[in-house]
Image 1 (cartoon, rainbow, N blue to C red):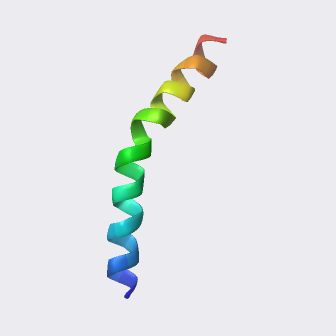
Image 2 (cartoon, rainbow, N blue to C red):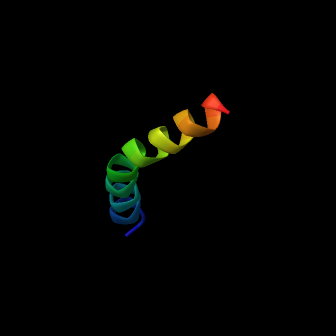
Image 3 (cartoon, rainbow, N blue to C red):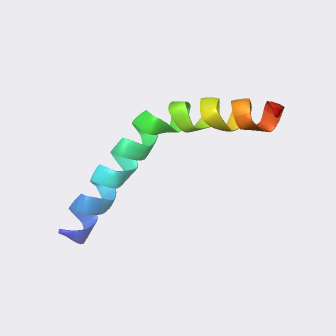
Length: 30
C-alpha cells in the first residue's frame, strides 16, 4: 500500500511539475 501511494504521488507530481515550474519561474522573475 505504501508503494502504491508513493507511485500515485509521483504520478501526480509529474503532472503538476510543469505547473510548479511555471509558478516558480514567475516568482523568480519578481
